[in-house]
Image 1 (spheres, rainbow, N blue to C red):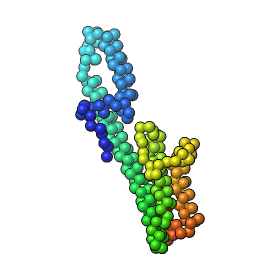
Image 2 (image 1 turned 90 degrees about the vertical axis):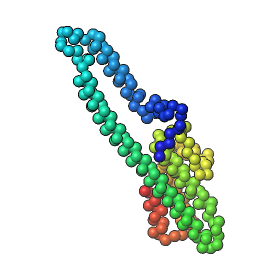
Image 3 (image 1 turned 120 degrees about the vertical axis):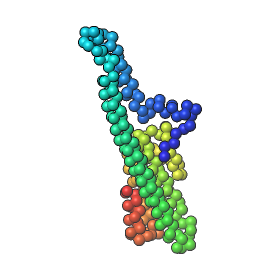
Image 4 (image 1 turned 180 degrees about the vertical axis):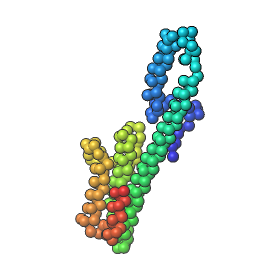
Length: 212
């Protein structure tokens, strides 16, 4: 859902916002067209020499207005569909990673619960949730063209100096964080045999959730 800020001008200020607007590219062209029209009306041939004054005839204006309305409606509809398609894909991405986080927590804590160690592995589960939250944040920042100043995203557990330094040195931050997630998953599975001790189909489901 798109949330707009309430303002005393009843939302008309949105029409004048330069970000995401066509005003920046349409106003210069409109000024050029206006200057050419003024030049033709001022220095063009008079109406007495060529019949009716074509500049005052509504025929050309009606044709131009109809064409402009059709083009505007077509492009607006196309842009609207593309926006919601992209927004749907972002939501699907977030839902898959949320499912992966839930699977990590549920499957990893099963080993501790079976042995009566309910707090076993809590540090690792907190770390993997932090990495998945960081993965979602850097993905959103990439879609926003790394505009971190205008959009502040919260990361579970914050971000330490080492992670911030590595992320600042790479061009593909999403790939780097995904590598950290897979690395932690394999370390938990191989170096700590008690962690993620689940049947292979359950583990393959986590991999599918991450890759999708």
